[in-house]
Amino acid sequence: MARMSDHPARWSRATTYPDMWADPDDDPRDSEGDGPEGESATLLDFLTNYRLTLRMKCEGLDAEQLARRSVPPSTMSLLGLVRHLAEAERDWRNWISDGDPLPKLYSARDADFDQAVAEQSEADTAYRDLEREQAATDAALAGHPDLGERLGRERVSVRELLVHRIEEYARHCGHADLLRERIDGRVGQ
Image (cartoon, rainbow, N blue to C red; front, side, top):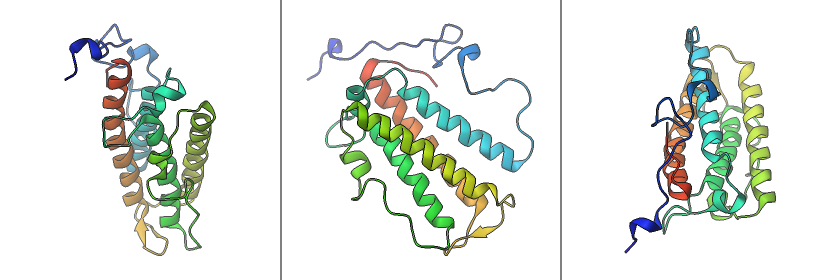
């Protein structure tokens, strides 16, 4: 049985609102002023903010902390989430392509989580993979401003893909909240 002293104390860097991750002036997710205009801009704003949230949840951690698993038998870790979302971005491009599918980044099923090891080179590679795959998917979608346009063999709409991307990042940001709190006690939105 775990004792209370076995768990890190809960904390936040925020001083304005103690349940927040960062004070509003330090938060890169701009929520001041008018929101975006239009459906496409709104969807992209939400996607951008969830991507930033994931990065914020991982900031300041070393490779061992990033690769630390949640609780057995789960293989989930923050590093695994970064790798998983890089893989998901690549898969989404496959959805909207008429060509041959791009190969998996991390080979076998669940390798994005199972093979997330506590080495700085692995963490650095995962961040580079995520940035590259996000940029490639963003570029592939940039040429399709009509949210109702259907793409790829499955004829998925641009709107459906954008909403699915937001949903995937949002769900995994919830996981990242719990993973980060378990690592060092840091909490916040």
